[in-house]
Image 1: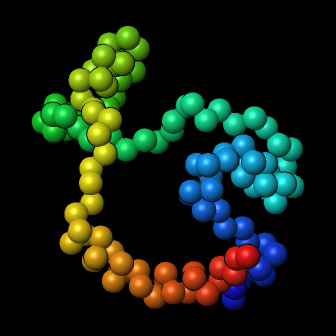
Image 2 (image 1 turned 90 degrees about the vertical axis):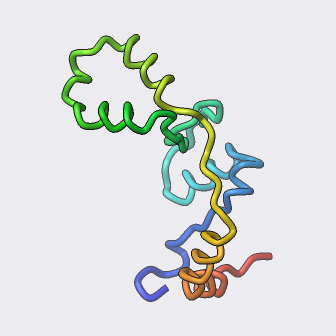
Length: 116
């Protein structure tokens, strides 16, 4: 709150966004003084994916310039071969480390969040 006044800050909770996406997005658009648009909740962007074959994935990443010469149909098939939709799980040790690392930030955020 040192840089921006409270009226210029909007915090959105992931659970609320998941439960009522369009309503929350309408609130965000209103907060930003933008016209509301219909949000396509079926299309997923930037989903976490894990390479199935790390060697093939690394090879493809090294030769990115070849992408311009490969037909889209082949790119799509290679992408399916390289990636799985399974997300990596955070271990309990990693979770505990992250909670300790961000403990001060979490406390500061909790102090900012006054909810009814």
